[in-house]
Image (cartoon, rainbow, N blue to C red; front, side, top):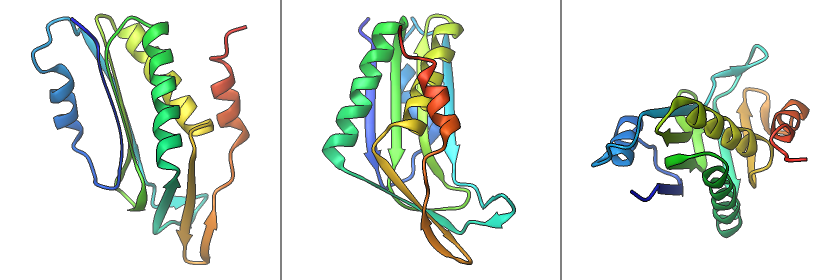
Length: 155
């Protein structure tokens, strides 16, 4: 059976259970699904966060995510992959991102999901603005995200 790959960038929320059902429907070759869902926090460092606004360049973001999804598919024996990333204004407690990695065995699914999340945090072309009681500000990149993503670079 051919691997199923779904990539979506959207403003609307998503249903994790529904996305798992869509990925596994009619499949008997899947033995493991690793799910990562990112949710908007209501605070950071003790300071309240009312919402995040995520912006992107649509064609660029979709192409970059697809390129990394293809890398994951070629690097690990995956039977399916779903990446959904929201854009627009997202309030505390709402979903931001979903990565589903399916494989016959768990290790490939875990590694592929972690690879994709490390890429999304460090290099995906999204820009994030936090809304706090003190005002809104753009979020800078974090060096620990770069370190996490760098470990996947083949020497």
